[in-house]
Length: 516
Image (cartoon, rainbow, N blue to C red; front, side, top):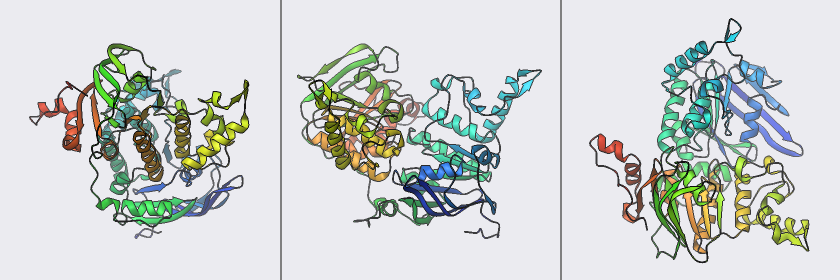
């Protein structure tokens, strides 16, 4: 655990433990980071990653063990002490104020520079632009955060973290809502910071990017270090095996070709057809497609393409202004799995039981009185069916790990028995095993005759799960690909069609003339 030159690691954890009530969240964790190292941390939801981040950022104190910084033992009394040492964090839940500009957000938690008793906005902007230039960024500092793209918000959060000199940058699921192209921009920035000598603790469920980016990988399971690997020492399947404790079956995932689309099967009846659909706010401008019974239809596009907005328009959250929607008779019930599960999918202060039954209270009412016993039975069945990890069905939803929160959202949807699933990034920031379970659930729903629309920033996921992929660009449907035409190259060419044409390449697939 000591670098070749004899200098101590920047950060070293020795037998670090943390108990939450009667539960051990961390048990005897050993881990080290060197200056300039990109160290990945992976594990199932509930493995202890979030607790470890809270310890490292001073949010919570360890119950036992030792934390050393530059060889010296430290114990944080609060986040300010961790920040004073140069520990910065970009959290999974973005810590930005939507109504503030990007520049204002860069100075949150810091004293504003002043001149003659007034805020010196010129000095603030100059400092931000200087740091942007050092990192190769070009963020619109005057734009409100609510008007930035997901990528720009992530980069704003990261820029805020490194506005002051930092020694350790902790990134918790930074690419959760980014497309593959945007993620590469972020990786380039992380590598640049690494070259400056800043260490990075990179937490992600996307194993492909972990294997590509990290110098070392530590796997947590049940609050303990299950395995540690150097660069190129592990395959994706070995990481999954270490996370789950189950020996890998068959060949490594890394050695298997990525499936391109699901095997074609006879389409069922049309559940929903959209013709030149547009939303009143202009985020959806001209989208056409048909979704069939038994089909998983992928929806892909770059940031700002209108993917989430399309699902919200179909769900009635956004008003349509043009085009038509034709539904099967009888009209199928629909459920929306929102991208932001904490803000829009759960009531955090309610229990798991209350969240699961929230949309189906009539099923648990007897003579006008809500039956708690009926709710308990239904939620307990959901826990067992979806393998939700919780202390009990009475545990608050906000206390569950991200993957288990997503399972609660899916359990509530299952209870409604919908004929149409509108899924917006349903596997975002969940571990690989939960991801597989969600895929299995969606395939099962399609096999039962439901229609599924699946939005994902992970193109590989869509190519693996969907029978067809609808490509959006600037609020318009530009391609609908299936069969042999459904390839990664074809999807990306459709996304970048105008740019490819301008550069002299073969253009994209053009506008959809008949998307049925």
